Structures are given as C-alpha cells and as structure tokens.
Image (cartoon, rainbow, N blue to C red; front, top):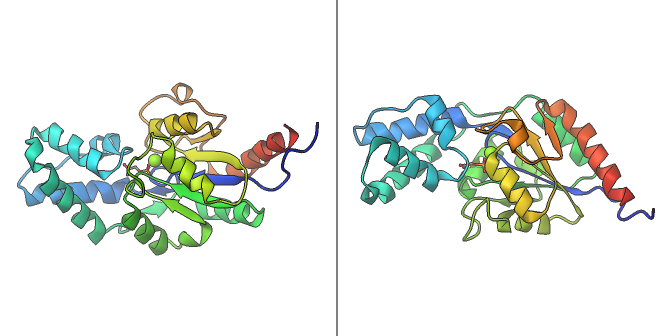
Length: 228
Ligand SMILES: O=C(O)COP(=O)(O)O
Ligand SMILES: [Mg+2]
C-alpha cells in the first residue's frame, strides 16, 4: 500500500483528569465559593462527578445539588471563577509520566495541541505555572468558541491549528469520547482520570493507565496511519 503521510501526526490532549489532576483545586474553589454564600461544603467525589462540561455547568450542578435558585447562577459562577483564579495550582500536578511523555512525543516530531472545557484564561495560567505551555502549538478552552465539547468544533479547531494529519485525541471522560466520535478522530482513553462509566462503555482505540505507555501507543497509531 502507498504511504499516505509519513510525517508525525498531530496529537491533541484534554487537560483536567488527563494531563493534570486538577480536582483538588477545583474542589477547594467550590467550597470557598459555597462558604461565601453560607452553604455547606461538598466532598471530593461529588465535585469530581461534576467535572467535564466546563465551569458554568459545574456551578449549575453544585447549585442544583444544594437546591439553590437558578437566579443565583451568575453570582455563583463569578465567585467560582474568582476563587479558582486565586489558587489554580496550589494542589494541581501533572499525572506521573506526563512531562516525560510530552517531551518524547514532541521530540519525535508530533505537533501537540490542547482542547479542554476549562476556561482558556485559567488554562493558560495553569499551563504556565506547571511549565507545560512549551509543549502546545494550539490551546482551545471551553470559552474559546461559542460551543464547547462534546461539540466537535473545539477539537476541529485545535487540530486545524496543527501542521499535520490528525492522529489521536487523548482524554479521560465521556465528554472526550463523544467529542472524538463526533469529530471522527481516534480516541485514546487515560483510565485514571474523572470518567464515570466503565472503560468498555467509552469508545476508544487505545486505553492506558500509565503515561509511560503512551509513546508506544502513538507509534502504533502512526504506523497504522502511514499504511492506509
Ligand atoms: O472544566 C471541565 O469541566 C473539564 O475540563 P477538561 O475538558 O479539561 O476535562
Ligand atoms: Mg477531562
């Protein structure tokens, strides 16, 4: 078979629950926001179950959980943004092996991008603070476009900014699997993130629980791409 495109393909990553374990800071910000209105704190698993569709959606779920009127949404969202912006990386760290994997993939010539539902200003602040910005040629946040994941448009935008064929989207959640499917991009599932469903219920071409294994999976996908 003729070689379709031998150049290293573009790889786009999700952020929360994929490259970084950000739930502890999101949890802390939620509870500071709730304390500010005299509401009871939420435990970590509850907040983790609310992550994935962006901060406006998360605040809506927090509000519903406490039975707070929808009219409070704008004030609560503004407070959440303020609280999160105040301490975005106090407790947030890349998952083990992430920096080494990104370094290897970049050295192998893969253009790298990011597509997250996190607001883009907070995304840049976190990437800068954790010294991750240097890896990404494209960063699309939850408010970069009028629509967010699982709409495929943000993922299309991230890949469009990379000078390469679309190789794979790497994410951790139901939203990411749906987005990949809608964008018709192969999906690699990091299984230690914030998903709520069994691995088998999320359509994927690769599932992995250790970033040390990702470069080999990518090499296999690249091989398949160049053979088709
Ligand atoms: O902000 C969220 O709710 C989820 O963010 P993610 O898209 O990086 O997982
Ligand atoms: Mg995620």
